[in-house]
Image (cartoon, rainbow, N blue to C red):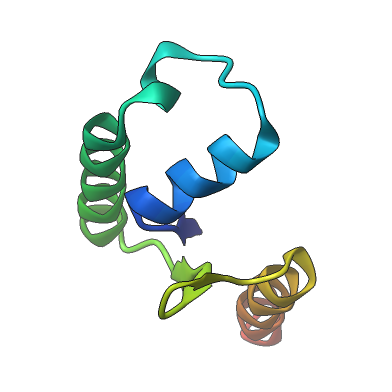
Length: 79
């Protein structure tokens, strides 16, 4: 499962946290490259991609958790 969050929303979330711990967290361009690579890898490996945003709004942890559970429940039903 790949949790997809566009770079500008990830940066806003990091900034809201108040302290940037890592050098890469200070650069939106780098976050964009990481997101692009993650989506490419997810496609190559046939991972499920879960969008953690709705337009320009980050989903709540509960909404994301619900999406994850939907994927897991679907996979378990096939066993």
